[in-house]
Length: 176
Image 1 (cartoon, rainbow, N blue to C red):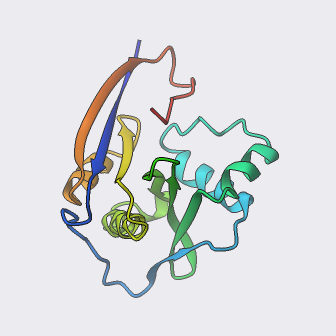
Image 2 (image 1 turned 30 degrees about the horizontal axis):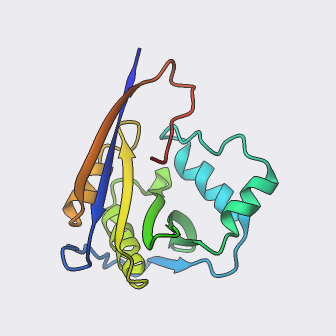
């Protein structure tokens, strides 16, 4: 059986952040202040189709609406020359922690150095709320640059787990 290793990372203050910024003026990141579940769904499918993001594939419109329009979720979209390039979602829980729930780029933007800038912005935005911690998880089904990017920005590993998966088509649990 194939296995998937999930790595959980955290950062406990903004001090250890090692930022990476993008000097290309055509790349920008904006908060989606008008919540539109259809946009979150589009970004989830467009970014996640390469990485076995299956946990929300079968969701109904009502489930997407409840998730994406929640007061505890903030969505930020990255653009390059006006085209969607990627996104991240910040989910604040009821104990003062913020999860970077999703973060990624669309395939046309791999390898351009935008991932570091996207993660830097996610960390900076998360710390504006002064949480107890910011955390994220990634797995071996994600892009090979994901874990090195998290570590390069100053996050530290606090847990790993390896699970057998019956087949690549099965859902992968995305939250601890």
